[in-house]
Length: 304
Image (cartoon, rainbow, N blue to C red; front, side, top):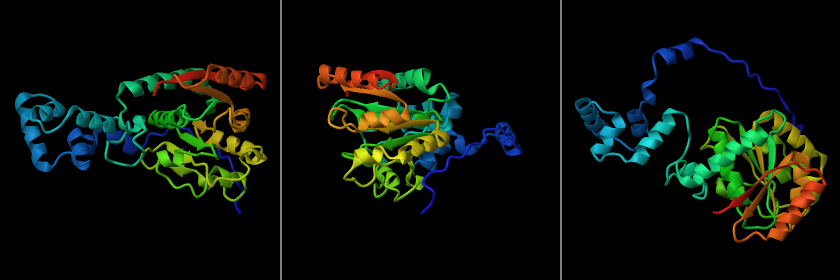
């Protein structure tokens, strides 16, 4: 058995080599909009040539020429621009992750703009300081959008270039492996029962800076596992290896898991759903967290 967790430091020194200088002097042709769209299968060589001819004739941008010819749509141009500026997102039909992950498929929608505002607030209120890297998402009951919000926020932090980890600590009714379409044979329960180590953390292929620790096989004793000293070791490890760590939890009114997780991991973001969450349940959950000294980062009313 390997040592379960070993934290390592990161070398953050800035290095500019001859390759970097060459890229500045001679930009890579593969980053051109046309090349990106050809590589993604949205254009072929013949259509690209038609667009280039119109671009030269009208002296307009490549994207505008393509739209005038009816060969591309606005969404196609946004997709290519996002790739140019290293802003990863997916197109419908890729099937890499669930359609529920709007941050992956609809990054320019009003719904995601609202989430972007939330992300900015969290950066200012919590993740803006080196000691605050971990946040637990808590809601009183089930069906209040806790897993949905955790998954979409994780994608959006990774789109900022933050090394992001999403932990599914709901070992009773886990969802994150389904949303990200990743295996769940090993995960958090495997680490806490000393049957695996940090290698259980999986990279999400569609997003360079995003990783997921699934819940793992359903154990008979989730509460006891969360009280294991290895959970503290896990929090110390991920605090070194990642810039942002988000933790999904079970319903707080049904189980004590969420409170245990929040005590050991840092601040809590409270989630409620409009026309579903009972005000009294929310008040009791907030009072419980406050009594034991858990910092409350903020509260979100989920409309989706």
